[in-house]
Amino acid sequence: MSDPLARAEALVGVEQYPTVGEFPVERGYIWTSCASVENGNPLFWDDDVARELAGGPIAPSTMLSVWFRPHHWAPGRAEPALPLQVHFDLKELFGLPEAVMTDNTITFYEPVRPGDVLRTHQVLRSVSSEKTTKLGTGRFWVIEVVYRNQADDLVGTESYTGFGYRRPT
Amino acid sequence: MTPPLRLLGDVAAGHRLDVLRYDVSATTVVLGALATRDWRPMHHDKDFARDRNGTRDIFLNTPNQAAWFERYLTDWSGPHGRLGTITFRMAGSVFPGDTMELSGVVEGTSVDAVGCGWATVAVGLSVDGDTKTTCRARLALPVSPDDNPWSRRAERWRPRPEDEVG
Image 1: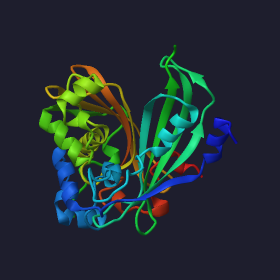
Image 2: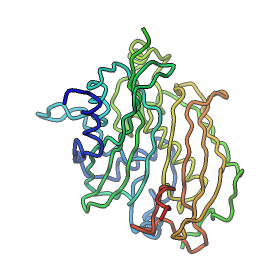
Image 3: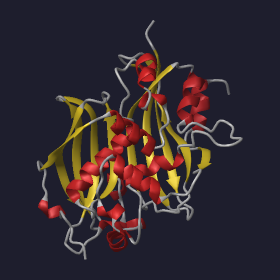
Image 4: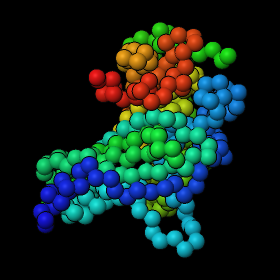
């Protein structure tokens, strides 16, 4: 199966690059994140409010991907897979040197809590036929990143639309 | 019991959120990058950003902008507000020295099949009138003073509009 489109289409719906977070979700990072944007939501700072509304402390929803960015260095570690490895695989498969992400949608399910150990995988959802835009000629693809906790509850999904292309010559 | 700050019935299409203005410094950018575990040099090394990215300075990273949007939305909703989905599209970069301005408008409200109240809010992040990032969020708001979106689980929590079908 050497046709790149057929090879890409064979990957649609396949779970790829399963990864476990390098550390459990922790409150220190939650507070660092809130401090970085001056987020004073009592849900993250007041344990009584957190207990009453959410059954205990939770992480800000948009921190979902934070728990998967690898340490800058770790002893004896091989190069980790990139967070959107499927995107880079598609660029290589189609021989498209440039790429942009056109939009990003995050959907939030069960709240993420301190102590959770999250895991993720990537799924290619679709690949378009060849298109020409003002950037160049290439293909659009949609990649979904799925996040689950240690109880296998779905905590979120991220959907990225990428456009891999070659500049006009 | 903590009373909800804002109920679904308090808002309608066209409702405008208070504008948030914030003076971005190098510290804002670096703190935001490290808080999101983004160690890439264009978010802390000005020479790298200029020489390799061709930008005039280091710039806010995407996950930190998402955190700014979340803060902006929940400042407005209060702690009962719970994000269902957030979609964003980047158009330009935000640099130290910029005053960023977040503004938002409610596009519509609804109650889904399981009784959860939703507000759809369009948020823009701009600098000197130039839009840098646009965002659309679907945020659950309580439908009554004793409602709490955070108590919803499994089938009672349908964050995507398409989850409502069927």
